[in-house]
Image 1 (tube, rainbow, N blue to C red):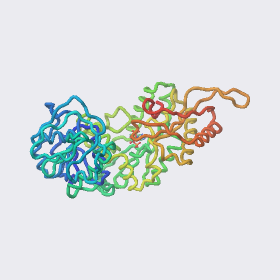
Image 2: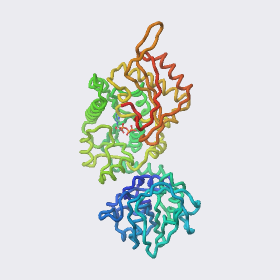
Image 3: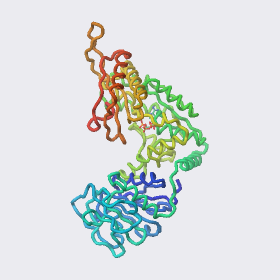
Image 4: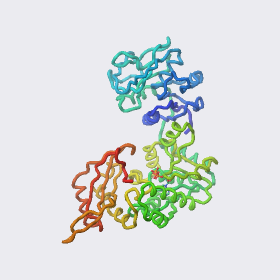
Length: 507
Ligand SMILES: Nc1ncnc2c1ncn2[C@@H]1O[C@H](COP(=O)(O)OP(=O)(O)OP(=O)(O)O)[C@@H](O)[C@H]1O
């Protein structure tokens, strides 16, 4: 996107910085995050937000920016938490260090008629997370809001510099979005964020960057790589989309992926490497070894198929970029791959041959882009599926028989979820095999057969997850069908573990 009249968010290291960008985009404006080291190279913003941060302004090497340059932009500035403290110092005031952290809710009391707090109720809950506080206020400062004890939590310096001690970007600040919106309304005309415009610009950029070269991308059938491949196709560049079947896919998955792409007008190349994977995994029951084998073999198989790539496209998303930018203090984006050997990609990246068109988007924005590209909703709303496939749902050794059992049980469970209208309500659901044979009776005989575990979780971001209380009729029907239709299974369990401590997958 062109960096004109956008909202520039300067990252002072807060864990919430990414949320500020999100919120501004949710409000319909284009926002972009910058490392403080890049300042003042931030294009021509229409507004600037200084984020919070974990450091104290009193530290010798505390993050800082050139104040004259900041004023030079001549646009409204909002300092959040650390950002507010820094502005107070810049305007000639001071900040008191403290070892005690104020963390949690506070009641906001506005003390003037500032537009920043228009429509915000008195005593509205705001969320604090800081140790230092502003101490001496410069002459040009006025207090525009306090907490319930009368301590200033919001300042205005001159006409267009605002500060807030709390975090408007977190949902615990009940009217935080309104406050951010009020700030943006002070900023004249800002660049809007419409996915349609964004798509057009992405396509233009892809055409210019790629020209007549060939671009290769790996498609897994998942949302990110699907949107990427369809976008490249829409841009009309010469694209090779490669799908590796490692033999660890769900029932009919390979065909489904091929058909899905076909109906979207993208032909994909399938590399059937299932035998190589299953042979390499034969007899291995250690989860870490299994992952390593799969990861390394994937890289070999994928790059064999790629050959000499002129360019490689990756479905890196914004959170991946931000994570590495703030952690490693480097501009290099995290390599989006579930494999640990990425030398080839790094090499290509150094040569400027890696294209990451989705790198400015969040997951829901990628879905919106997918919708605007005409990708059917059933593909965009697909549950996440791990790179190592069914291997992580098959603890112990992996055999074709065990995989087949998982495939059948999973297909039954997923079809029941869809039938009962629960598929779209859960984040992820699957059947896995518990590698113990338990006793049962079939006819007059005892039988010793596998136990199957069903898992369905809700989650916001896969970092934490809760199990879903599915209707018992759905569970009963799934269990009955599995026990009647799938040979080798005599017991069905439902996994009621939260993450943490359990993880979403079994391995
Ligand atoms: N079976 C596969 N065949 C080809 N490429 C793959 C395959 N699995 C993964 N990839 C590539 O590796 C990238 C990262 O895989 P990962 O499993 O982490 O998925 P992801 O980050 O959820 O992305 P997606 O939504 O595209 O699956 C994918 O975006 C895709 O480009």
